[in-house]
Amino acid sequence: MKKETQEYTPQIPESLNRVGITNLRILVKTGKENKEYRFVPKIEITIDLPREKKGVHMSRLVESIAETVSEEAFEKHMTFEELEKNVLEKLREKHPYKRGEVSMATELVIKKRTPVSRRETMETHDVLIKVIYEKGGYRKVLKVKVLGNTVCPHSLENTKRPHIQRAIGELEIETGINNQVILQDMVECVEKSFSTEVYTLIKTEDENHMVERMYENPMFVEDVTRAILNNARGMFKDCKIRAKTTAQESIHRHDVIAEGEVSS
Image 1 (cartoon, rainbow, N blue to C red):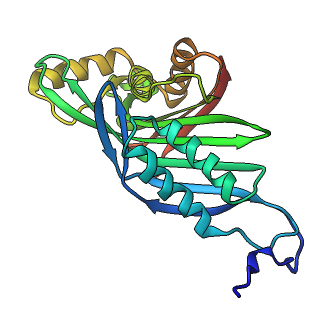
Image 2 (cartoon, one colour):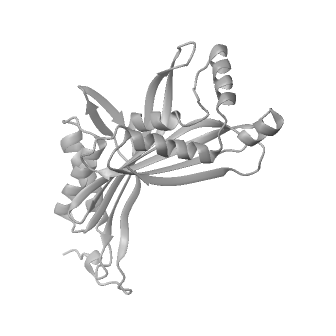
Image 3 (spheres, rainbow, N blue to C red):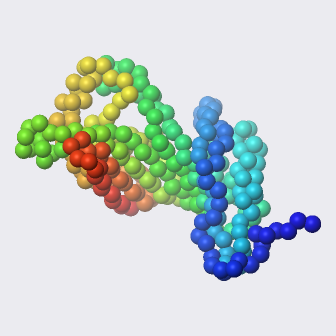
């Protein structure tokens, strides 16, 4: 007869907020408008642990993901949020918890055209989708990380030859599980907040356009973060909105950041 050591009383009876597995990879299929998409996201699933329990039954967490993916995602077209919610529901059948989280981090590829030559280019963005169960209800957190650039207003004002750097804009939206928020819209929200967008493929005429746009629109990281917040507040409703910009400084040995949050 096997012993469930996880049910023993721990030496130090202290409750824990998040216990689980991370860096799990598994094939996930989602669908929209009769199209199927395949991802191999990096998955994390955690639950709370009461003070009287020594450990979590880790295999049950993995089972909940594997069974949900095999039973539903391969047969039904669903979103990441629906899939994660179903994982948490299945887990509650296997393992008691008061608070649970499932997150999937992957890459979103968006087809775009360059601004002047209209060449087709594929742009990749890091995204994270998280569903949280707590107090009998579900909510979700969506996050995108987008590349752009900034032109320093201070050096432009003083030298007319400003330094330019690549920047990373991050937008995170926390909202109810049924509030439809589209990741591509979040990416576009961040892109239009930079001095200019950046592209994988550009021709000379695109480069000229982008450089002219950059010099016409110099921005500190503070400006970019405020622009992300302002744009997001206009695009997404009933949300908590968080933004962060990191500039990879070209003339310093360090980077600079700016963060903020608003509600809509």
